[in-house]
Image (cartoon, rainbow, N blue to C red; front, side, top):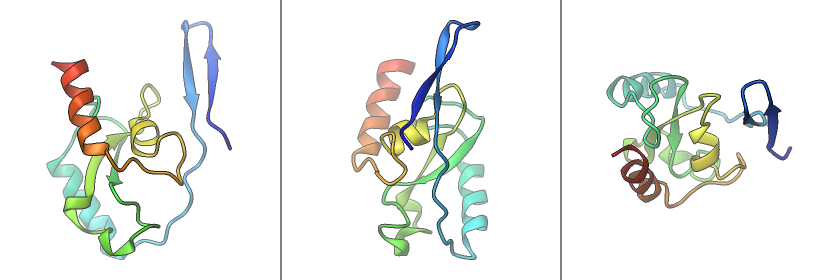
Length: 115
């Protein structure tokens, strides 16, 4: 499914319609690692949002399952209806894709838009 922009004319802006994420088999340790990560890293690396947060894997689990629990492979991105940083920046508008330059992109984006 290709992402689409839905017109919300009453508000004067368009919103991204994001397809469902594919299901991935997870380690039984993942929920605890995820909770701990979000407690320590509680804002989106791109926009600073503190709502609808997800833990993003720099190298996706379906590419390298061994890195699923590696904290060096994690970062916090939002899935807020306003920005969808996880889908847009983390997966470049395709859940099967990934951004191998995400840490640099996050630093540059934050510096440019939030300082």
